[in-house]
Length: 250
Image (cartoon, rainbow, N blue to C red; front, side, top):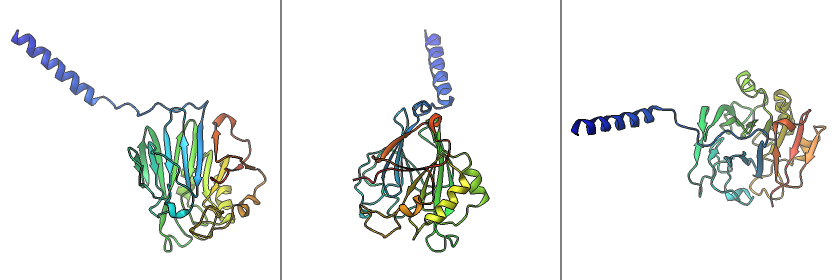
């Protein structure tokens, strides 16, 4: 009896050790490309990206001083491009994975690549640095340019941004690229969809950035939406570069 019990104990311990050595499953299964992703603009540079399994990525949540209302809830992942108050409000959020640096990260089963960029046209001497993030969800490759202020992309940055489907780019100038600078970045990257951000409007109250219209007049295909959210599927991406402008959140 003692030997039989001892053998059972050894078998149980062995199974536990084996289970501990096995690869951990993804937090959630890959999003369905047939459904794609839902994109919600909360204002400024803050977006929510959600796929078919309800995996939620929140990017650059802002402080209430910015002017827009804070309407998001706790996501699975927060991407923080830099630590300025209008991009890094983590209060009242819980249970999330924070990505805040360059390199390759795995967050909620998704691989996110962070690439360093300059926040100004003087190699960061004025406003410091920011991160660009590139990742894929629901069969769609997305890139958020943070507060990029560079007039041109470096070869390594451009290489990381190839084959991007949806590009979020600041266009308001003053502390980032302006309309023409943003258009130059877009031309170099050649995404299928461009979403302008970080521009002036009635809801934005802490700084006088340029309005989005200065950027829109530089493009032929512009779609202004009646809502602040929209769905993107890889199979139905526009054939030519299209600027999508979500409605300013109210």
